[in-house]
Amino acid sequence: MTIKDIKQAIIAGENEHAVAIANTLINRGVTPAEIIINGVTKAMEYLDKKCTIQEFCLLELMLAGRAAMDVIDHLCAEGTLNDGASLDSNPFSRQKIILGTIKGDIHEIGKNIFSMVMKSYGYNVIDMGKDVDPADLVMSTIDHKADFIAVSSLITTTIPHVREIRKHTADRGDHTVKIIAGGAALRQSSAEYLNVDYVADTVFDGLHYIRSI
Amino acid sequence: MKSIDRITSTIHFEKTDRVPVFSHIFGYASRINHVPLKDYLNSGELLAVCQLEARKRFGYDGVTAFADNSLEAEAIGSKISYRDDAYPHIDEYCLTNIHDWKYLSIPDPEKDGRMPVIIKACRILKDEVGKETAVVGTVQGPMTLAGQLLGLEKLIYCIVDHPKEFWNLLNFTTRVMIIFGKALINAGAQVIHVFDPSSSCSVINRAVFSKYILPHLKQAFKEYKDCGDPICWLNITGQTEPVLDLFPETGADLFNIDYLVPISTAMQKLPHHCINGNIKPFNFISGEEKVIQKEAKDLLEETQFRGGFILSPGCEIPLESKGCNIEAMVKAVKS
Image: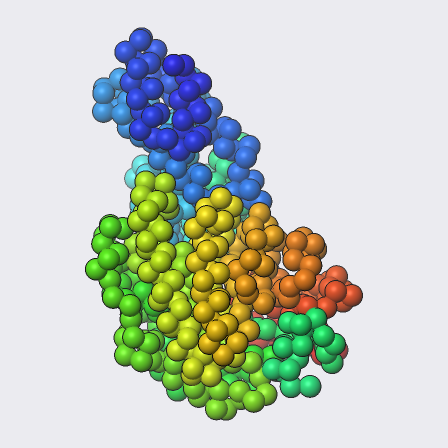
């Protein structure tokens, strides 16, 4: 078994198999950092290339995301992965993202997938859950000194709340945090209309934007 | 030419006086009639009156007896919350695990939840305009309803973790859609509109669609056809390009195409079936009339030699849409 097998198991959505391989490799002396960077992240990079807006499939991404998170959780539970210390080679791993489904909406799948993908790239994701007031998102951003606010929505009636986020950040004197929006309803709109910095077509499109900052 | 004849002829690729236009106006009908959405969703009379007024104002080809995506799930036992200004959402799914599907009961459309509201609305619409325009009855498709009973996230994992139970749950939801659909046909619906956005390839892949969803859609449409031969309309919003070629196997007559799929692709993959679409829904909120005019004009030009085309948005018109944009869409087929 090799790290490549972890990548393949994650891509295939075989979570238990992926964890079993990780366990075997750890016992053989492979470091958690190698497993994350050359296994989990490589699997995500493969999915990144595959999941364009035309090819995106929730089922495949959810299964792969679950497998990736199970491997990361297993490494944490075993005490072999210490709070991101193993991810030092990833320059983005210290950045924080405040995440939530915006007020008026309770759909969480898109948000949860975004969370899984960002975590598997080493970002620190603080998930505020669903139906989150824009003021609470901003308060949390200040409390955690976050770099990004990411909001999702499946329905258009939430758009006024998305547009409020910028006002709350400005009122708090925060002009540096970047706001990113996604989800079936929001991605039909534009950054200008939503008063955000970026509208992501897919979860990986969002990842690319965040990495570009 | 009456709207109903225009639609029927278009389905059969026969000559018509103009291209038909569907509005996908559901809850929006309450907004323009200044009726709280919550009241609209709970009263057959109000729903019918708002639908009739909306049709009178804009002049499109059809009225719809439809409340919201949670209606069947609520009648089965999921707990929902209403809001004044938005569609209700599910607070508590009636299934905590997929294995418990066997304890669910098939709802009675005349008694359970708000199903009687929609049956009543359908009867009123049929009485008022059924001779001239299409009365559309909407039911949730098997995958979407299953997601409303268990939660979509859990359901998706069950496809892989518990495939037999996933199949069993789809058997149950298909029985619900058949019984509700037949009740709508008996109440006067000439078009049965199966709405199944969770079956799109944005959610599941072609293999799952082919193995699990297709047989259930096929069964439902066959039973509808055996019950008064309504026009059968399949509406899977989102990305459907990888499965378009499988759509004819469902037995439906008409296929909705969302804005994510180019109409040229749909025409190529469904050469002998009627399609409707596919103006970007969000443009009804943010766009100017000229944006809608251009989209409509482009679609009409692209489909003019083909026939078998109904102009419509790709999905429901958002609640916050501008009336002038709907007028622009309807005007496009009449000018």
